[in-house]
Amino acid sequence: MTDLVIETAGLRKEFRTRRGRKVVAVDDLDLQVPPGGVHGFLGPNGSGKTTTIRLLLGLARPSAGSMRLFGEDVPRRLPGVMSRVGAVVEQPKFVPTFTARKNLLLLAGSVGVPASEVDAALDRVGLSGRDRERYKGYSLGMKQRLAIAATLLKSPELLILDEPTNGLDPAGIRDIRDMIRDLGDSGVTVLLSSHILAEVQQVCASVSIIGDGRLIASGRVEDLVGDNTLSVVRTWVADPEAATGHLTHAGYRVTRDGDHLNVEGFEHPEDITRVLAGHGLFVRELAPVRGDLEAVFLQLTRGHTLGGPTDGDAS
Image (cartoon, rainbow, N blue to C red; front, side, top):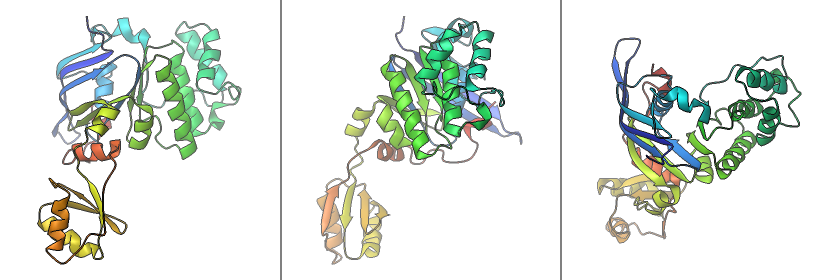
């Protein structure tokens, strides 16, 4: 029996667009999420993140492959494990004129959860002092927190969040980030799908990165960043436009960063100075760029889906 909370093997999902074109949204995906903590699920738009989540929750049927939650086959055994799973994938339907507390009390009653759990859920998401306000007066961030509170009523062991900070201001993003970190620290396994990589790096212990529906990389954030073989250096020369041309012609990848150039694709840093010096350009600064999750993500997903049909197009 596996101790993984989420496990997929050869998972595939095909669908057709409104114009009849066949699209492979998830392609032979092998995903493994260990218990406890926050696991980031990253990929460009259209890479298959939301489709994968919908498959795991039984909201769509796979074309091929297998899925397990807590070691149980899904969707066949999904009813038996759903009591252990909470998810915020789409905006939940709350009654606008009811208070947050009344909305949760109604929901708790419909699923057979004691009313006492409402207070605990509101407290965990930081709404215990605002619970008697009407839902329609809530900010977007407060609505998102209430949605998460609704999933916590049944004390899930696995919480799946799909872009929970979309549309939030910086303060709202920080609040959701801190709440997710606290949930992970409490022992809940959180699968966090997000495109805000700086936030992911602050809250996630491990990540899986996908592109074109396939797994590209997976592991602890510190290992992925530490093993980053991007070999990016930041350099400054008096004529950055000429330097960009010469370095590009020599086969390096160059991006402007203000008055500086970020250079990739070299084997040794001195190769850069040698190329530039050969054209009468002399480097006044040459320093390695500190690796971060965003840099790793951009390198790994280069050439993968960045547009076209989005995850939400899948059925």
